[in-house]
Length: 408
Image 1 (cartoon, rainbow, N blue to C red):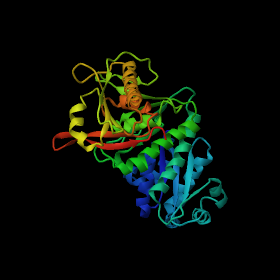
Image 2 (image 1 turned 90 degrees about the vertical axis):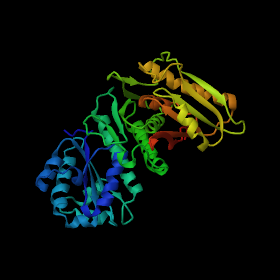
Image 3 (image 1 turned 120 degrees about the horizontal axis):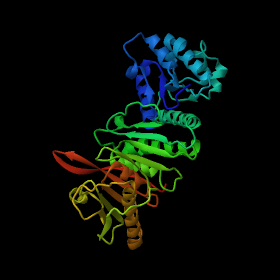
């Protein structure tokens, strides 16, 4: 029986390795772990290992990247394609996404694989066609989206009713492969240390989160999602924003605490008094933007003060903190929920007091799970600019990260 949370196998010619890298990266963006020869093939006889890998139940799917060069590859035509077809014909959850690329049309792609697969069967698989001679990043994202939808459908059929879908988010290093994790987002190739470019956020990562949320909404209705991993705070807030409180997609976060235990944090947890309060300070009456500082693990105010001159003029500043020494520890899910709602209530108070609010500039020194919860409660604001704390020349500073559009 196929393990639906397993890897996606990529069949391709190495002369197309740059395009193959796009397909691998796009699947990682969408939480799909992969198997690729140059990354995963051990130092053993190639054909025997490929046969073993394709037969492995932890290979959940395959992408057939059919290009003109496949015509001269015996290993693809006579080993990979027939073994992949056999897995698909077993009808046990394994699925195939065939791709006609390199300028091939459907008939030509079918002809190249004709030793192993009839043209009619290939057409039956609803083959995706890339019109250009070379695969683009957008093409790769479209293929990853297709794999994502089929993967969520397969997992939803397999996982017993009531069980959570496991979602892991890793930014600074690749996650280990682990069966049972529905989606394992590996964004490590998109980041340099803790930073990704604004274009990467806008064009790749935030659209991937939107597709993931939509796929779960439409193809795993009623499923609760349990997040975990090692994200940056902007990435955690972006995840929460994609699963906003009004989206109908329940998301909790597995938060590891200083005493080495873990707790499931959720905005649905019963609130417990945390002691945090919003402190609101008026700024320029002609401005519209506001800044929000959330100080839990440390005081965000000193670094914000040094960075503030780089911001547009601010209408108001909201600082959510409590009167005791740092770091402040959140000992229960209810306290984490309370802080998230205090942030939300502070934002709503500012909007009531000052009227039309422009961009919200969000600076956080918090546990990742709290950033997720805060992100879930941003849904009534049009534009939220997040910031990442980085170290430069031994001193800390903030840099812009994801620009969120919560109510789009």
